[in-house]
Every structure is written in structure tokens, then in C-alpha cells.
Image 1 (cartoon, protein in one colour):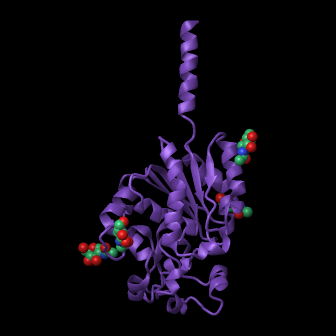
Image 2: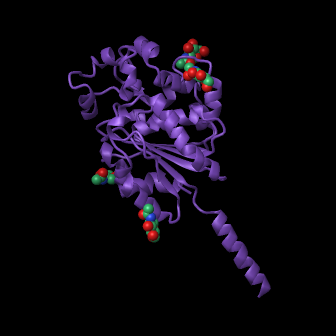
Image 3: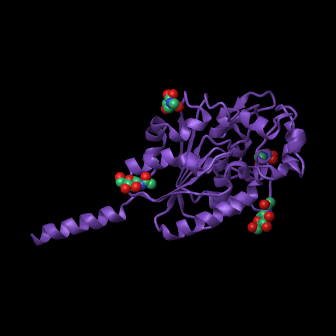
Length: 286
Ligand SMILES: *[C@@H]1O[C@H](CO)[C@@H](O)[C@H](O)[C@H]1NC(C)=O
Ligand SMILES: *[C@@H]1O[C@H](CO)[C@@H](O)[C@H](O)[C@H]1NC(C)=O
Ligand SMILES: *[C@@H]1O[C@H](CO)[C@@H](O)[C@H](O)[C@H]1NC(C)=O
Ligand SMILES: *[C@@H]1O[C@H](CO)[C@@H](O)[C@H](O)[C@H]1NC(C)=O
């Protein structure tokens, strides 16, 4: 009897310690916590008791603010959550939010983010005529956006900071203040420490697909991007991968990158599609 009670107590203790890690969600451009209610329900339903936070800042039009500013603010918001969570936290970031999280992970020393899930994020940049572009620059087509984006004023708009025009590479490298630094396309002093910080994650999960309709090329969600002919070069052949400028190759050789490619999902549906949740997300949220 005594032994049974002890085992029962041990089981209870073990189960409690072994609860799900907290999940922090970072929204995308032109949206906010409201758009993530379904995802929060999915998590609550499949992993009851999970502490889920959808960070409530830089919503809707404010999501166009400069990214480094947003990165700092999101960092401050997430800090108290990760301090409390001794066993780590999962970070699930949608679209532009994926870039904010990528930057946060590189610039935040001693973070304990366990798994970083980038849900349809333009991780290698964006180059396409989309609804979002027309909202911000109604008079531009993709071939002229570099004119408004690659200068000091343009760099005050978030989308310009990951606008990656393959036909104006040198201007991109020189004038874009965000993505080339983050991906180590140009060398800078913080590269070693940024890489160390980023590599603290245990798992990188990249989710995207060909029917997205916004992320262009859609392979950017898997770190692929256009070459100068607008042909897609996959992640493994990108220079930032081959040179391991920010840790991607190391993560891959550790076996810690998981790709999830799903057709039939439009950009704004990724976070509320239950099939995507069960097949690409659920198993990582433990
Ligand atoms: C999660 O589920 C529990 C019970 O199943 C419910 O009481 C709670 O309100 C739910 N929380 C959210 C955020 O949906
Ligand atoms: C990659 O490495 C090569 C050879 O060392 C170097 O010439 C090139 O500038 C590097 N590129 C990047 C993006 O780090
Ligand atoms: C490198 O880090 C320092 C200190 O955190 C910061 O002031 C500086 O702006 C960073 N450099 C770049 C290129 O971001
Ligand atoms: C949900 O995702 C599946 C693929 O995982 C896809 O086939 C289906 O079309 C999606 N449905 C919607 C409404 O996005």
C-alpha cells in the first residue's frame, strides 16, 4: 500500500513537472492577437493547461513601424515569460513576426527559447507584387519598390526592411538596415555573438507552401530565395547557409531543422487550419 502511494505521488509529481512549455505567439503584418484566437483554442484543446501568450503590441497599421524598434519591444514583453519558465518556452511567429523573432533570438543573450516555429515567414526576404505591397505603396510595382525602400526614409517602414530585390543586390546590401545584417549577407561585428545566441534554440521549424499567395517566392519561408534570374535557389545553396553566417548550417548538421511544406493553404489561413496545426505544429509544442 505504502509503495503504491509513493509511486502514485511520484507519478503525479512527474506529470506536473512534465507539463507543456509555455508558448509565445508573435503576430504578422496588419494583424494582431484577434487573428490568433483559433490557434490559441487549438493549443488549449490538444495540450490543455499550456500557458499561451499572444504578444499584444505593434498591431495592424503599427506593424509597419521599423523592425529593430519592434524587436526591442517584443524582447521586453517576452523577457518576464522566459525568466519564469525554467524549462524553456516555444516561440511561434507568423509572417513578418517570424523576422522579428529571428532578430530577437540573435540579439537576446541567454534566452531559453526551446523551439522556434516560423509560420509562413519571409525569412530570406520578399520580392513580389501582393495585396500587402499595394496597401503600403499603391503606385509601385515590384521592380520600382527598391527606389522607395533602399534609402533612409524607406527603411522606416517594416516591409522595406526585408524587401530583397535580386536585381539591385548592392543597393540592398548597402541600404537595407535589417535583413542583410540579420542573415549575415554583409559581415559585421556582432555576427559571432548573434550566431551563438541564435544557436541556443533546440529546434527550428519552418512552415510554408506554394499556394501562400503572399510570401514571394514562397520558398523564402524555407530560407530559399531568387537569384538574379528570379530562379529559386534553395536554402542549402544560399551563401548564408554555405558560409554558416548565422548558424543555419550548424542547426541543420545538428539535425535540428524541421521543414513542413503544405499545398492548398493561403497566407492568412496558416494559423487557423487544423490540419496544418496537427501535422506541422502540435508535436513541437511539448
Ligand atoms: C482552455 O480550456 C479550458 C477547459 O477545457 C477552459 O476552461 C479555458 O477557458 C480554455 N482557455 C482558453 C484560452 O481557451
Ligand atoms: C562566404 O565565404 C566566401 C569565401 O570565404 C566569401 O568570399 C564571401 O564573402 C562569404 N559570403 C558571405 C555572405 O559571408
Ligand atoms: C552590435 O551590438 C551593439 C551592442 O549591442 C550595438 O550597439 C550595435 O548597434 C550592433 N551592431 C549592429 C551592426 O547592429
Ligand atoms: C488546410 O491545410 C491543408 C494542408 O495541410 C490543405 O490541403 C487545405 O486546403 C487547407 N484548408 C484551408 C481552408 O486552408
